[in-house]
Length: 308
Image (cartoon, rainbow, N blue to C red; front, side, top):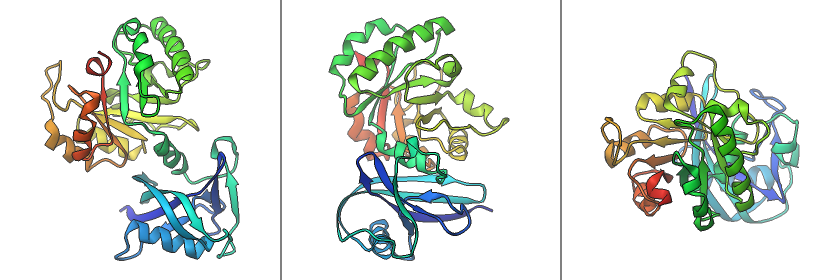
């Protein structure tokens, strides 16, 4: 049986570094973690945040941004993390519990961190509009100028691509996305062929998810987001087990194949089973974002109706 707890964590930033506390207890002895702790009975996540920051750091939180929650699966423990970015506080940070405090950038550090650290930081980087490329990328290159650079990211879909074609397309889009400061996601299928290309995340198809049930769990590369396409509860269960950063649920209101559309109610039901942010795909446009959010989704995704 897997134990379940809920925690609130505080993200306190200093330039590119975040404040971490070194654990002195088991499990995860000597690992660094974000300040915060377990939500007690009848506490709200924000109340727990305020209490933990006062007890641990001797500060009073004045302003924060809530970035939602993720649930991280360990071998015998499932932890739901409520993520708060601290904007303003009163007091001077000090180790009230005699713990070691240190500002660290996990992306450039060789220290030990809790497994969930990369997922927490990846959660902050997610954008709400997920553009997926059509077969011919030349038709969309001019569209990049109109993308919302603060709220969009792009996946190069490998469907019908040969290895050579995909590498060439990835080089083109990687350069454009880097210039526009737009995160670029590649497909797992050609991941090992793109070592010389700058990208920000790796996407698994539902078939590749199914393969994870028969093989070992994914080995994460530091600094990359991991996402997956999900069409069923079974897909989502596998994504949860492997601690993906986000999933794309489809088809919601339209399918070009024989698959039945899920509809918004079914989409909402699947969202409730997910341990990570969810995107809706299938017949949607960017201006469907508010509708998607009303059914529990984080963002919307699309191909033709996004680009044209």
